[in-house]
Length: 252
Length: 338
Image 1: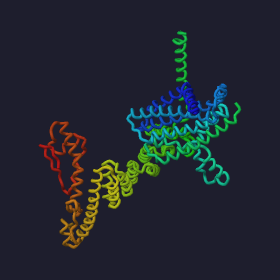
Image 2: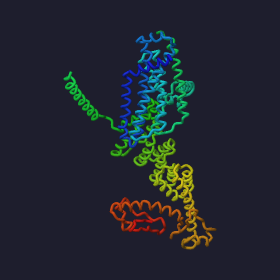
Image 3: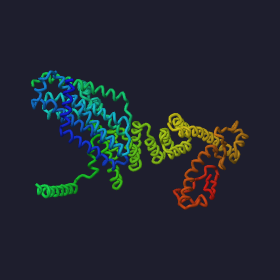
């Protein structure tokens, strides 16, 4: 109950953040402007609109997760509003969880709105939508949940700027981890083992990327989506536990 | 306040934008790299794929637009298409499902750059990602037939295109003609069998069932033609009917036609199945009937003779009758062709 109250307040506070609307505006503009590229693409306009729409949902979702997520706990400490909260009969991990769920709800709303705009636009342009398009949006949301958990963890241990840099780096590296599993033959021994180990430890965000399949109308196996979601759920849980532990030990 | 927004701001904006446009024009004029040189810096696609932050599909789209622009410039310029293959490869590495890059790139590499190997390899990669696409094997088949004059191999790829069940009628006809021409009956039959087993369209399954039988009949006709050649060598003239072959003991009995037709010989001793000829005749009648109707619509009357449709409608000629020495029957009163 307390968790939900914190989540509700976090959601209300985040919705009032002007940054959110600026990012939403740019996202919608990118989606609507994508048709301009389609005009010169020799019959690929719908594919390009779908590609850019899903990329906009992902990119602006990540920016929202970074800008709001890395400030989430830090702001409470910086403005000393944390004192009015932690003196309430609530455990610290409940506070972290509530904050996270509030932001997760906001991201769900943002992803749903942007996906609805993109879907409507594709239909208006005469394109068709299949299940893969919506599964791609679902996996984007799952990726945002993981990155938000990382942002919350960093928000409780470091400054927003450093946190934002680390989350953005994690986003870029997370989409390149497959390189660690496709090493050339001349890399062997301990180096190879370490790099292969890093492949399994680092967040593999490519798991959540089925946007190319969605844009090209390729069917994705439900088992793939289910396993990707399971991977995201486990990773997110680990990060939230670490965030709770870090916040438990923090002197505020 | 009003002065600031109505005078100073527009003035600054106007002068500023003018200055920006002018300096951009100067930068363009002083550019030291041309389009081709810029493309030398196209990053290695294997590395690029890993560092796009999940945006590889969008980057593939942007490169696709660049590829179109490049092809257009080469078309109007040097006609070398030096970077076309690398561009297509980069795009398909970034987005392996980008179907039209395989189809269009394969065609452009073969037809414009005359690089058949690159075209075929790109298209084969495309088939691995799009096994149900008819366009990709069709492009390979076309390259083998038109650029390499290798009709038997081309016919095999065309058969793959037809086996998808989505290939348009002209591809099916072309494939069938080539297979018949080169005696590729097994390939042809497996193609039709695939359609019969897998096509979701009832009319395609019916067509496949008939074509399977026609393929058998054409193979029988080929055997009869070979026997007629031996007959002609022995007797000095080709047989006029199957009875001649039977009397000379080249065949033990006369082959039957499950479609209700029979076998005939032309003056050269080439054997035909009338069921197959009737099928070809029906196919050839369709465009002629369309042209006759077009003539009536244009001139308000049926053409006096069939040749009148040439040049006055979309028809470029009167199709040859498939029967040896056959002629089309035409009624100028009703416009009926048969």
